[in-house]
Length: 163
Image (cartoon, rainbow, N blue to C red):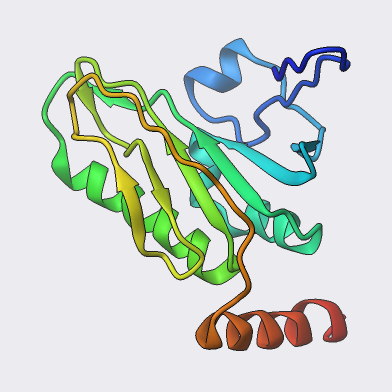
């Protein structure tokens, strides 16, 4: 749910439901894209990070910034899962030439990062795992660098012209 002053309330419901989610929620159908202050923002929730197709939808719509919301915690300190999900986020950023903001809960043990990943997968900011912190990031649209231009050009050829 997104609230903006003097604007309609906007909703996005998770589409990749499995296990407990499937038993308690209805699958959403919204594309998860909204605009705020001239920035096109794509939203994905938790398990959706494991499916590149959900992020290709955002690429096709040319979002400027993508946000992934997690409640991915464990009763045991599972650093392997944390690293795996962090890798998924970096890959989604690289393959879609998109800045990604990731947000997770920290208790009892955090298994997804609260971080910002650049369009080439670099970690721009990351909160300390399992510690209460506030991540502040001032997003600005930037021109693609050489590698980003190459990935975008080839992706456009495969995605738009290859159909």
